[in-house]
Image (cartoon, rainbow, N blue to C red; front, side, top):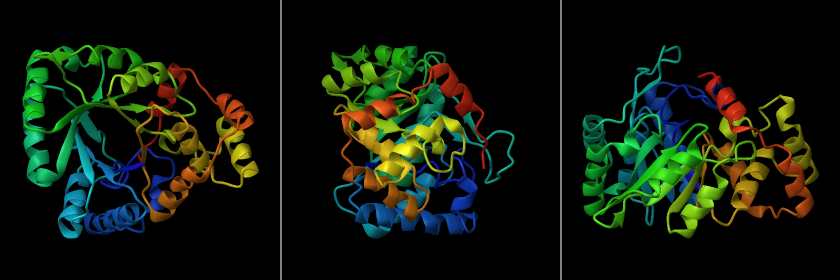
Length: 309
């Protein structure tokens, strides 16, 4: 399991109940909380840490922790493609703006490396889609290949109803006879499973598979009061575990998954997430959880309507 910093690096995010996770949300208080959660994550065995240019000050919080603690055997990833625009405000009209241009890649690569330095080992396109055209932009692909030659791994994250088609195209991209992408980060959870087959194929072909949004931005936790999660709540009660641990255990049950990101904003959430490793799922439980699957269009429409809080 890895730790994603989307909910820790900026005051607002779309996770359900995000506002309940902080005593204060000024920059200094959030830096302290992020460091506390990072300490706990490392103590519990987490070694992959995932940030992005659009996650507010996540890269700076992470770099401050890394440079202070000097932890061993960690892998740090970040992403380019979105710019954080909320200026630390919860009521911002726009919280992030997407741009997959060559100029933005060069700008954000410099920003990320200025902050993270040699800690940065994986650089990913943030939410690559067919619509953005990033996978057919030859200048961008060539620049990513240049970065790959310096020793940094290159990945992409996926988003939206066409995750599978986007990854299918990404797997065909080679430069100088070498595949460009080393990893893929995709949304995959009890609700949204549309990319499962192509993710399994990517794993077989040697691509590292990182799963994000395994808890569907809090919709697969006890914070969700809607009927869509009732089957999960009942199954978790029977197994005497938390809904989030069960939802994560279901993802971990897939042997083609290399890393699952926890999006925990508190040490309590992180400890609950890690209980997933204690669970063994039998056929009856897997069958019941199978009933939670949603159509991708429905899932992503609902995600788009989640409130920044």
